[in-house]
Length: 297
Image (cartoon, rainbow, N blue to C red; front, side, top):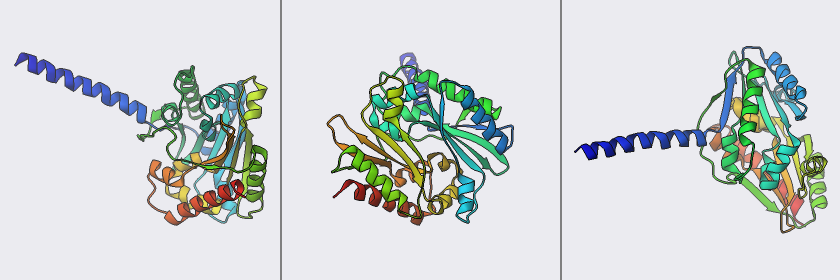
């Protein structure tokens, strides 16, 4: 009887240990409530990024201003896209598809009368991409936490669990053209669509080259249609972290050129969206049509 009790005791505490480990692994967002107003928090975060010589600020996107330009309303929300070019290049070198979720980003947004800061957890990125053996991820995790804390004046905590498998939610279209032709065709298609706007182009290959890291051709296009994205962000402000949408154009180890993007259905699942199905379908169809037309003769 005593042995049985010891065994049950062991299973109980072992189960708690495993459960805690899974909770830590499955978290996908980190969040902090700001002690400051929206504009002050955005300004503080931007200052934190610029004061760090190792970081580059690639883009600052004001979702609420873009919504206003489309004659729509959206609670205050801005996303800052930034990163350490060397650290980011090493991660993309390990798994090229990580270029879709890099550089890193932080979202500042109003939730009712509260301003919050959120960003993707490193555990989420480790689960979605093949980062085994990558050093210094714990330092990146601590760095992001410190940045969010400095910007908000608050404590960073986990928000929600979401189990993700390697490369889950990523759709890739194989191109029949070389890298430059594929990229140029994609840019032209986006620019010729009056409903779309390019917010930023990030050349991962060039950034890697500048810090002495070898990388195959890899470029990111950040673009969107506020009339489609705004209603989705109205349902869940935190999905603004993943907007505007992105195309990753890359050449793999076999020399095959691909166009990759996040499946809107995956984002809906991750952020528990149940409304605006028509907008999500419109977004998915647009991404599919743009990538196919750019990749095929």
